Each structure stands twice: as C-alpha cells, then as structure tokens.
Length: 474
Image (cartoon, rainbow, N blue to C red):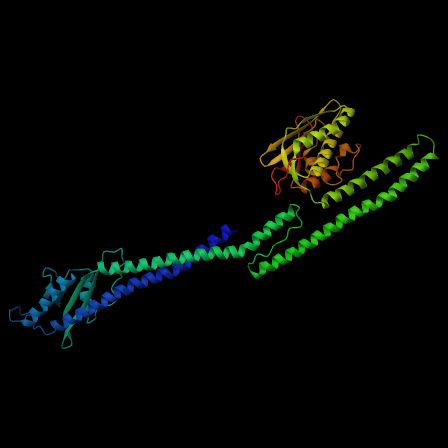
C-alpha cells in the first residue's frame, strides 16, 4: 500500500510546489525587468529635459553649429551614456531625423519594436510594460519618452538596452527558487515517508496478525503501533473480535472433547450389556453381530473425535528431528500389517533433519501409511520416500490403489468425508483431519495428488528451520 500512497503524496506535493514556484519565478523575472524599465525611463526623462531647450530652425531641422552648446551637451551625454552602459540612445524629431544619437550610425528603423515605441511616444505617452524578455531570449529592451515644448511633442528620446545583465539576474533568482524548491521537495518527501509510515504501520501490523490467525496461530494479537486514532480503534476492535473467535473455538473444542469423553462410559456399558445379551441368543446370530460392529464403529468415532479435539488444542513440542530415522521406524512398525495383507511396504529414508514434534509427526505418518496400506490391493507396493526440498523436509507416501478423482482430491482431509467407493472399508473419515491438525500445530502441512498410472500420492512437509535448535532425535 505504501508503494501506491507514497507516489500519490509526492505527486500532490510536487504539484503544490510547482503551483507556487512558477508564479514566483514569473514574478522575479517581471520585477527584474520592471527595475530596468524604471531606470531607462529616468534616463530618457533626463535626456528629454536636455533636448527640450535645443532650438529648431525654420525648416524643422536643428541648427547644427559649433555654438549650439545645448545640442553639443546633449550629444556628449548620449555618447558617454552609450560608452559607459552600451545602451543605444537617440533624440529624433517627429520627421525621424536625429537631433542627437549615440552611436551616430544608429537611426530609426522602418518597423519593429523601436519604431512602435517611437510612434507611441509621439502620442505623448511614455513606454510602459514592454514585452517580457525571458532568460532564454536574446531580446533588447526599448524605452521611449516624448520631448514636449509648449504642450506639443517636438521630438522623442529612444533607448535600446541590451538585456544580458537583466537575464542573468533573473536566472540567478530562478536558481535560488529552484534550490528552494528542491530543498522543499526533499523535506516533503521525508515528511511523506514519515506520514505514510505513521499511517500504514498499524495496517501492516494488522495484516501480519490477520495472516497469523488465518494460518492457525490464534494467540496472535495486534500490538499497539501508534497511527491515526481510527486505526488504533480498529486494532482494539480486531483484538476483541479475535478473543471472541478464540473463545468460541475453544468452547467448540471443549464441547467435542467433553462429549466424546462422556459418551465413552455409557457406550462401554451398552457394549457390555450387548455382550451379556448375546450369551442368551443362539450362536452366530446375525443381528447381534451387526450390533456389535456398529457399537465398535461408534466407539472408534468417539476415540477419533477426542483425538481430533486434542490435536487441535495441544501446542506442538517442536524440536530438530531426524525425519529419516523417524520415518524408517514407522515403516518398520507397519511392515507386519502390510505383509499380512500381501502389500509390499518399501521405505527410502536417508538422514534428513526437520523442525517437528516427533510424537505428532509419528501419529501423522501412522495415519498416512495406514490409509495407503488399507486401500492398496494385495501384491501392490506402497513406497515411502524421505527427501529435502528447499526449506522443508518431505515424506512422500505413494500407493498403487484405486486413487481419487479430482473432485475427491479437493475434499480429501475434510472431517468425516469418505469416498463413496470406500464406504465398506473400516474407518471414521477423521484420520487425515487429525493428521492435518497435528502437522499444522508445528507449521507443517499435508497435500494430496495423483500417482501415475493409478493410486494416491501424499506429501507430508515439515520446516527445516526453527527458533530453538536442539540435538537431532528420532
């Protein structure tokens, strides 16, 4: 979830910073240009004041004589201005003839920004807000002011300024803004990391605890992990729900165990009375034999129910166990039963260690081997193989019996479930359920599959690593 929430927060914060930074950058550029424009307006106003007192001849031209001190002063000022600042400046009559200009080769163009500013000043308006020059543009800044005498515009002062210095200042301002934006973005990313961690930490704890409970560790609870108040309340509610579920399951297990235990005594008494009654009936009575069989079957079901309740309730005593030696022992124990039925029981059990409860693993292997021998026809083979695969030790039991269909494989291991083809074979349908419960208590598992060309393959897995190493034992 953090991989989805964190980019969203970063994108939002980047958008906010851009929304603030772009207008600020534009404002800096405009402020730099406005400062230059104001300076140029002041300069043109000073030149206009000097040009205001330059006399004109009757034809409208200036009297260019060495005695015209005002004109000479104006020309000197313009020349010095150009030499010092590199800014072209000139005073032009209404008929575009220069009164004074620097450099002397600079004249009014026929069109363009300079001509537009000149025409605007002829209307007795000073230049205002020239078009913005950006750092990547190699533009020039034109400012024009009218020269007014007796209320009439007699000439126009025009300046054309290079913008290198202005654009450099704007670029430096932008670099400062960019550095600030980067620093703010780094702070925002750090804040987003802290925020997502603070918000999602309770969610991760809740997810891990839910997974533990789903895999059978019902004692797991959500530890206090901070976060928003809503998530803290959710964690508290989840713990209350887990306590309630655990109590319900404990009551269910206790009921099954108590019912199984309490029913054994009256059932034993009933079976004893049946035996006493059989003494008064003729030898070989079929009805009494059927009653005896059903009574023994009921007793077996009660014993299996009690074993299942204990298997689901008891904590596993895990230890580092030699799975190969333990499996070889169970194969040897079941060999006489298989031989009596005419089934070959073959074991391949190399030394392999695993983390398991030896008693629980022995009981699970007994259930699996018992089923394999029980459903395998005479003169067929049941093979038991021990191996290590990755982080688990495996015991694979294969038989050449009738096997199960795909639909039956999906249900095998359910409580009281038996295939319709095997109803006449002794059993309660709880053996594999007990096996699964015993293995799950120690983080083990059992799975079922097809064995070619026919038969069933059962795989028992136990982890090879644990939390408290011990000496290997069988």
